[in-house]
Length: 260
Image 1 (tube, rainbow, N blue to C red):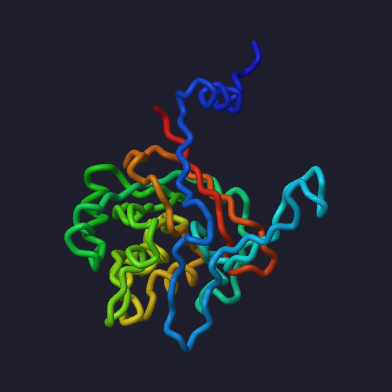
Image 2 (image 1 turned 135 degrees about the horizontal axis):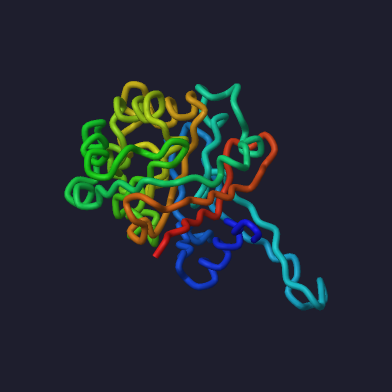
């Protein structure tokens, strides 16, 4: 008897719906929210399409576009070289393909974030989750559900800034260090515009998720959607960033496989 094929079983489960494919990607358009830095710094580009032809005299049988976008616009992947702490590490095209498919743990702090947009996850929060659900996955992702994807229709609501800066949930500096240096995960995924909390510019170090994760050869996924459709454990994430040579990151189509 031939040995049963794992890939054949996977294909059959996808076809039957026993494994659901959940799209975690925010649609990419000119209205996709982007991060806003202080005016003295360079800014990321809003996504733009430039029509080349659309079944007309510029090309009678085909429709296509040029596009312009920042690497860190919309749902995107942060490579280690994105931050100064990882400047000698991998660009997005050099990330091993085997690390783009990995198990995920989903930690739900949406209720806390609804009460306090500046809510910070601490190490004790993760330890409490592990007591109920088991350890974070070795070589996997920690995905942070905050309910922030509900705001993605509006630049203003998504960035949630006032005269003191943005107010969005994230990790405390100590939690970011622990996740980067002591936990077994390869990266952090969030629903917000970046992996750091809105107030992280004032933390020590500033932007600790970027600083610690990139410096530890780990990754970030941002502006995820539909994390509410995932179980706390058991999902497998497929992250597909554009392999931009020397790129610090790239827009990505991020999918989750969930056994139903």
